[in-house]
Image 1 (spheres, rainbow, N blue to C red):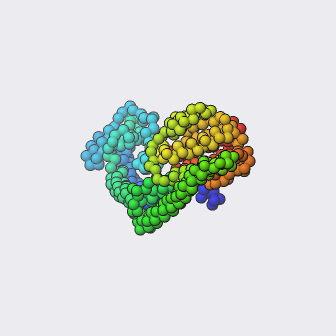
Image 2 (cartoon, one colour; image 1 turned 135 degrees about the vertical axis):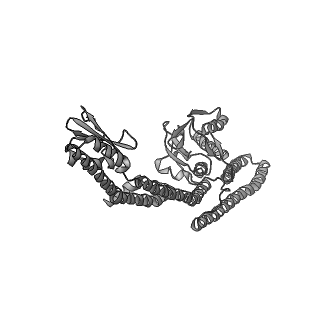
Image 3 (cartoon, rainbow, N blue to C red; image 1 turned 30 degrees about the vertical axis):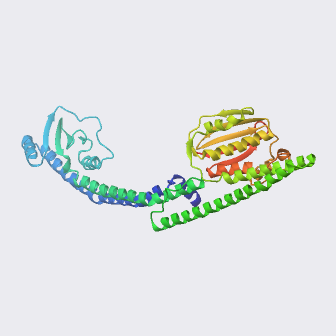
Length: 437
């Protein structure tokens, strides 16, 4: 039961820190106001209203008793009009109205009904809504109607409105101050979360500066130090791999020159093929290190970007099924490299490639299908690892070092997205790219 109740509250409570903090501050203020209001109305307003209504009813009853004793009715009416702020009229040949004007939710109406009913039974009628400042009371007297107009302040304490004003305004003022304070306190946390999200996508975090309370400021400083350490580590790794790949080009070039002067052409041809394969490997290493360099993000339409990438494959069997998608922040060079790797991979193992784009909830999906031999389901995760190559079906007799899919995976993950694999509708491999917007 406790678990179910806890789950229910988690579902209905707001998810953002600002609104949760506001509830923590505002809920006690509102609860205190409700309690004070209930106590005031119960112990002061209602009791005062009851006493005033009983006093007024006694005055009306006294006047009614005088009428029944057949004392000079006009003299009684004149005295009440003069001394009690009443407007009394005796109407002949009239009956009580049949329409109900009493409000069940009004304390004034309930109090009047409670005091009048024991005295006059069902021979009375009153209206508190027609006139703004007056109450219209009518009592049946023989074949006549005794109509009495009296001010509402005779049965309703005027302090209620003043109390409501003073209990509401300070509460609203306190909540407003709390909102301003909480905004200032949660803004640094929001900025830290945005900076972490940008850094996770490989974007620049230059606009971020630690601020706020001491603990939040400390978290901001630690994030900044962590960001610098990770950036240095990535740059060192990329520079080392790039340097090694670049330095190996020199001895390869010398080997190619020596092979050109070699008299044994059969041997030279075999060694030349090995050297070409080594050059392809080095190019992939250089590409792997080059894509990680900082690149500015731009707001672009992914469908237009796919059309630009596929222009160089005019002679290939590539079919596009692109929906109009919203623009998203991406690093165009990295995404182009990612798409090129995946398209090259699809064309290398199949004859036909189909590319789809779809908008789904808060994500843009890119589907790249081929009609190649495909990959066994158990290898889906492995082929996304660096330098991993499968020996069967899809990897057989194909050159490369196993970096194409891993580079694409790293690029998409650096944009906050995800890559997954499954069997395509063409019985080959389907690569599914999900990018948030």
